[in-house]
Length: 342
Ligand SMILES: Cc1cc2nc3c(=O)[nH]c(=O)nc-3n(C[C@H](O)[C@H](O)[C@H](O)COP(=O)(O)OP(=O)(O)OC[C@H]3O[C@@H](n4cnc5c(N)ncnc54)[C@H](O)[C@@H]3O)c2cc1C
Image (cartoon, rainbow, N blue to C red; front, side, top):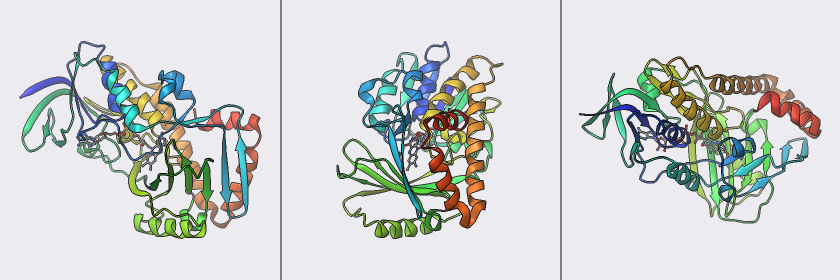
């Protein structure tokens, strides 16, 4: 049986960032990815401006840049403008390949097309029979993590997000549509990207089943006279149930740990940060990540907002109207951004 100091399951933003950082140590590292190509994932590819500097993301990876968004609800429509660009989009395949290129391949062995099918105390099984031993195991394997399942951590805060990817340049505004009758406290979006537009919606599965969400989405498309017949349908889950990242010699990073916002669905930032923080935790046993604690705290606030909006019932529209008016003030935007986002 081959043995490594560290085995990382999953080459998404979390696993790739973790591998990049561990490559600078003397640990032997194996990174495993079930897909043939590193990068592609059902995702909006939206990144907040704070990430660019923090992760040295080069300009050429950025596609669209947003300074404004429009919020619709049954009773109002508001355009919220910011002084600065606050959101960028990236292509997940290009982003994954860029991250992959930053890993020192002399230090990290990378195996693609290799699925982890079973986990035991000190080894993982690849495919049907190959065993690989580890001292440390990192679950960076996303929303349906096999490593998380091995740890016995249930997922109770869970969303389904669906989208149509439509080749079109007909849309140029970032738009969110709150329609509590159809999406509870979640929403639908129109998110123009470089050569296509993503039109989608999401909701917590405790509130709406995936089937019901799709039916409601079809109603919403009809109501807004949006034709998605030329689009590719995609659906994926979002796990925002954080219960810790360190479990003796097993670590969880990114979405496997539930480090995603249940309110906005944003998870790339947390995946990059937690991937790096897990690497630090392995290199120093006494390291306790304040950054992960902060992401978890913000995630918790987002979940509280969702729960609050749910409880408001028929008054939810009034509250959404109030929030969108507050967001028009750039001073209040800054305060809310600081308290609720980064
Ligand atoms: C519709 C939708 C829109 C979204 N939009 C945004 C957005 O605009 N901005 C944003 O920040 N976030 C967004 N997200 C969330 C974001 O996509 C994720 O939070 C982010 O990709 C998490 O990164 P990760 O590295 O933790 O996991 P992933 O990116 O999911 O990577 C996990 C990797 O592990 C691999 N893997 C899984 N199981 C195994 C196994 N058994 N063996 C080997 N490999 C395995 C997978 O193939 C994958 O490559 C969106 C999500 C959805 C569903």
